[in-house]
Amino acid sequence: MLVVFRDISGRKAAEKESKRMQEHLRQVDKMAALGTLASGIAHEINNPNNFHPV
Image (cartoon, rainbow, N blue to C red):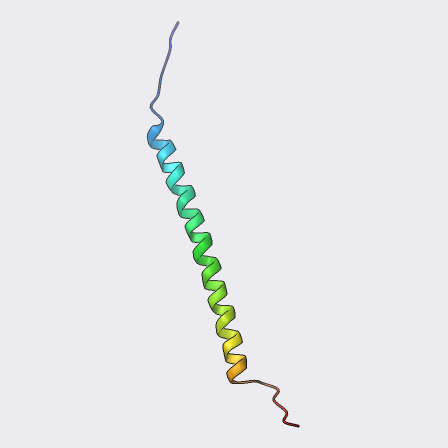
């Protein structure tokens, strides 16, 4: 009978770090999209395209 044990703690730590980094990148992407949206809204408020005074 042969029993083999392998230390996978390094791999588990790398997987955990990878998941943490992916979540961080998702958050950064969300913030970038929100910034782009806010910039577009601010631009339209300051420079409306179809301004027709009554």
